[in-house]
Amino acid sequence: MVILLLALIVLGPEKLPEAIRRFARVYGEIRKMSTGFQSEFKTAFDEPLRELRETAQLTKDAVMKPLQENPTPPVVADASEAEPPQKDTES
Image (cartoon, rainbow, N blue to C red; front, top):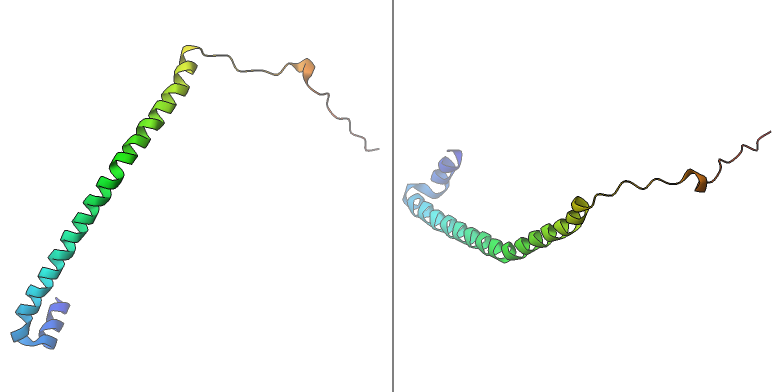
């Protein structure tokens, strides 16, 4: 509202309608360009992202399938192979 009042004061009542039409055209063109850019961006990145997701899923399946089919118990270190605790040499 303030901007419209300021425009009326600066441009005057004769030039204001044409200025509003010009602004509307420019705004419409900017929106078209923005929509086009978004569409191009989505098109350019949609396929590579889909392929990346598929590769990640295939990798996950390849890793998880053997683990689900043949679950192995956790490896526990043999106590006889462990190093004896260090003795405190402070006297």
